[in-house]
Every structure is written in C-alpha cells, then in structure tokens.
Image 1 (cartoon, rainbow, N blue to C red):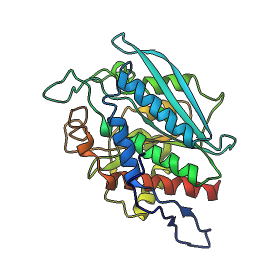
Image 2: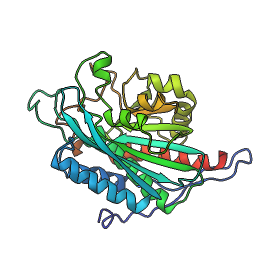
Image 3: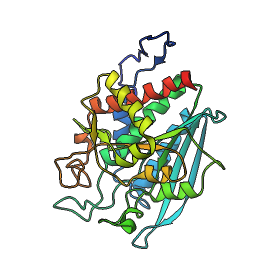
Length: 316
C-alpha cells in the first residue's frame, strides 16, 4: 500500500563511460518511497524496546524485508541496559546473494530514544525518532526494494540493529558503551560464523532538511578509502552541499563495534558544528518528528549509496 499513490516512474541512472570503463546502470532511488517507509515506522509511535510500538514495528520490518531479501535472520534476546532494565531486542539481518564472498554491510538502528533529554519539556517521555533511527532504516528499506528488482553480483547485508538509543547521558567509556547494545551483541554473536564484509556503512540521522554530513573521526581513521569513495560519489551526483569535505568530530555509534571486529566501517551522520553538542537541534527532542524529514536529503543519501554498491559489481 505504500506505493499505491506513487506515480513516479523508476528510471535507471547511467554512469558516464570514461577511460573505457564499462557502463554501470544504477537504478533510481525513489525518495518518496523512502519517505513512506520512514512515516510507516513513525506511525507505530516511539519504538522503545519492550513497548507495543516497538514490537509492532519490528514485525512490520521483518515482513517487508522477507518480501525483498534472499534470506532474513532475526537475532533476538535480552540485553541489560545501564540502569538495570532488561531490554528485549531483535536485530533484523537481511542478505542479498548470501553465497557471494565479496560483501558490503549497510546498517542503521531502528529503536528510538526513551527520553527527550535534550528538550525543555516532557523530558521523561520517549521521542518519535523520525530522523534518529527511522530515516536510516527508511533509506535502507528502499535500497532493499531496489535490490529485489535490480540484481547485483556482490553480496549485500542490511542490518537493522536494536537497542541502540537506550544509553546513559554523559561522557566516559561507561556512558559510551551503554549505547548500541544490539550491535555489541551481534559483534559477539555473529549471525554467520566468521562473518566479514569488505566494508560497512552506517546511516544515522540521514533524513533532515539541509542535513550536512562530514568526515567522522573513527570512520576516517579506520576506513578513509570508503569515506573518500562515498563522498566523491556524492559529489559526482551533485550532492556536495550535503556531503562536505570537513572534519565532523568523533562519534560513538554502531560503527564502532563493527570496526572492532575488523570490518572497516564508516558513519554517515548529520552534524551541526554550530550547536553545542555537534548534532542537529532536533536531536533527542520531541522535534524529531516527520516535520524534519525531507525527500531531497533522503534522495541524496540513497542515490549515493545505490551508486556505490552498484559500481562494486564491476570491481569485484
């Protein structure tokens, strides 16, 4: 039903032939479709672990991914939050061409913050998380839909990690490791024994109007080649106003634990250097709702990633 009102024709994006390089046909990323996937998640309300909205949204994501991917593995269990709360989680792991050795890992978190700790009112109530969580998942859902329609030769794994945002406010290693609990669990319990990928790309807060993506510190330290490839691809597509060649600081996010197991992974995350915390003003507030989501930003991120992974077919 998400596409019944979408009349836009899906046309391939052609990469120009240069230096006798074979032509690569990159499908068009449909931003309206990604927007619909973001809204569908938000329609369940906040997706805080153990809540009804969280359970219902998880079921929805599994159903959609099973309709597109070759295989879907649901990794579930219980993790302990920093405050002692036991969180029921589900990591949703979808694979395309599971037999291929050359693999790319794309991932985002699908749960939402249980508190609006950066707001000035209703601080103890959960946020909707349209950008912080749903936007990355929405982009990856549209990519999954396209991969179902347009086959690639390499392997693609798309993981929606859970229990990312139930973390302790403040600095220090204790606070940092209180986030990304689903990713930490996966890193210690890989869905396929010995799993690895050529590289990974994390999407976090990738849907807001006029978003700006800068070089995240750990990403550049561990996977500078991947960063440069993604940013140059974005520039070639006309998205240099989103992907800036600037230092964006260091962020503790899901990609940290992917890097820790030897997979070079980068974080595409919206940063605002004018704000006190370095993130967008709607971060961890009730303003993080559908009003901040913009199809132009979704398109910039989604089309860039589509170009990156479809070009991998030629080099692998």
